Image (cartoon, one colour):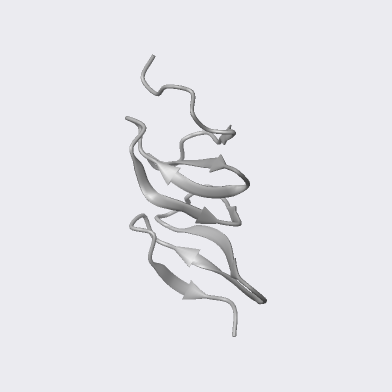
Length: 79
């Protein structure tokens, strides 16, 4: 077993990363199971051409955008 069961949900790997969920928050792991983008997002899609669509909220502020493989918001779709 490469990655021990510890997540509520795991997506398929896409560009070397997989979205994982714990307690309804999402982050990304690499192929050895290391969390490379912290588990703090509300929604997250697979990576495609180096970017992934995500949604994050803090209180009443919802934020949509694209993150890179470092977890940095590179294109914000919210005001």
